[in-house]
Amino acid sequence: MQKSYSFDPVGIIHSPYKTKESAPIQGIFRPDTTGWVEVFPEYAEGLHDVEMFSHLILVYHLDRAGPVELIRPTLLDDDVHGIFASRHPARPNYIGLNIVRLVKREGNRLEVGGLDVIDKTPLIDIKPYVARFDSFPDACEGWFAGKEDRPKPFGRE
Amino acid sequence: MQKSYSFDPVGIIHSPYKTKESAPIQGIFRPDTTGWVEVFPEYAEGLHDVEMFSHLILVYHLDRAGPVELIRPTLLDDDVHGIFASRHPARPNYIGLNIVRLVKREGNRLEVGGLDVIDKTPLIDIKPYVARFDSFPDACEGWFAGKEDRPKPFGRE
Image (cartoon, rainbow over all chains, first blue to last red):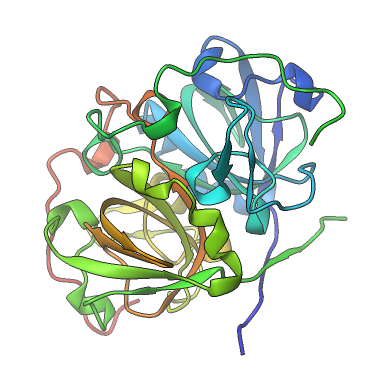
């Protein structure tokens, strides 16, 4: 018998992108646009020393994604790929990841650059990005090689 | 009123590390040790094309972590740091991330290197690691700079 787990948001991401269609497919396609990560006051103590880092990993709930499809066309490519070989939001458990640049901290609010998140996305966790653990510049990009940002299809999740 | 979300594991991670004390603090400290990621058969279709990638991001549930502490000493350092400036497992929502090297795929099982996960950890998601989106080799390491693997303290979570 598999167990279900539950989680409660620790904050909310305030993004200039109000709709799916207005957000870039990945934050690196619009690195200079900034938004604010608000950590709820009861979790603010956990931000101690966060300003020592230039980059953070935001973990969030893809709360406006469509129904899960295990194999499907993606936002970057019209070919079908498995969801575990894709970053498409319609994925089991709806967990999103966005590595962002920390611009500044003001109390329990962090200004960050390179967002691809829609406004009011529930924040689940923040982790410091550590190049030694997280940076693999020679990793093979698979089918992502050469793919660029493009308009998101309206009327298709 | 904040909303709670729930998630169901999509697989299980079989690791050679049976206890917290035997696992490295981060996978890069023992890159050659391999384990197996088992994706449950009902999700196996989502693995299509995963073998095109050299590295994968495993998202998992830190199911054996101790009680959450927002500010605490870490496994790498005796100074206290906020949990959002730390990779310590005792974090709100108990979500873990491990970037691993894909060695091979056999059906719904993936052999991976560079694990730091304990055996039988519930898998929540797999994402392809894409260097253009995820690799920031010049990111500032904050207090992690120069820190090396060390024995985990027994009797302290």
